[in-house]
Length: 414
Image 1 (cartoon, rainbow, N blue to C red):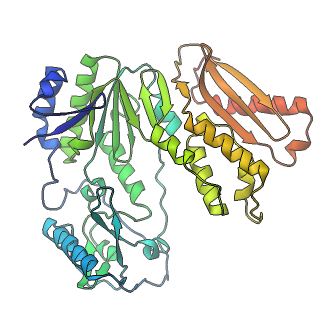
Image 2: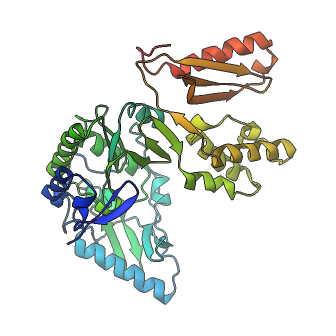
Image 3: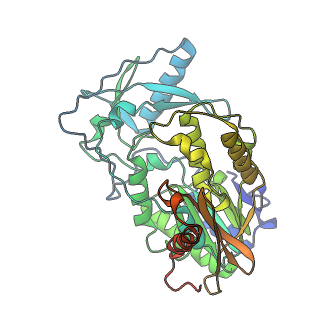
């Protein structure tokens, strides 16, 4: 059996692994080979104490959606994938009073992925919102670290069981029958919350110390190789105890830079990933308000790198969509900001911070500096009422807004 590890952007096999990673690291990975199987062992995952459950809105009509039409080739593929799920023990035949259809979507490698169209059941599900960690808070924790590893779980949702008695609410139909899930499927509206609950419980002792978790991505950060070895062993022990399995082909070990979500982290540097930048570089003029909102959502996710623009006006309810020169100029400016992927400095909370602010008749903004290097940007569009205030009041409000956004560490030097 051979594995592939990613380290410093290079792929290498188990046979030449000792030429790339320190022997202590390769020995550790071999010691925990059971945590990195090529496939998840057959059968249901163990009962973790956290299983997925679905509560429906009282007196809601149960969905019974018709099967989508498929050509013979697609029908055979659906049948093959359902049989594979049956063989693995992930689904079983059902007598559920509700049912939703399945669809096939193309994967990057050209193969098909069978997905359950959960929209009908999601519409009548009582929402539970487990807190999702803030990206900026997670990145702040990496300050001072020089060595990173990233562990990616293999089909993480399928490693969580459905709670006994709730399986019927996941029923889906094909041309060949009605089935229900025994493990948590993809597509359910509160599945991310259940997954984060499990990850927080399994890795609770390490989160905020040398681990950050964002769904199935586990980032381990350390200030020395010796320290990193202890951290890796602790995480591997926790995964082994919980019988959670990782995908070795998507893991990164002992590197001085790592991609995490949309960022590339390297020591004290932070940069937006180039593939994300290119998403805007190839973008054309937006034609509808929902496309504008989707684009602004990406900008919000990378708000540390950009200053807001009047495009927000187009996302407001009741506002007629009009794309004129101001919107075109603003969008092009934002594309330019993103595609050039500016560099940020990870904060050092033992050093002094400087806050530089400015204001105009449109909005307020500023930059948090440390040793003359940008740590974070912030901005906000002024309301119609605030636009009528005097310029000096704008600047005072800008400073207050900036301080409020930067009070995330009580002991931070200012």
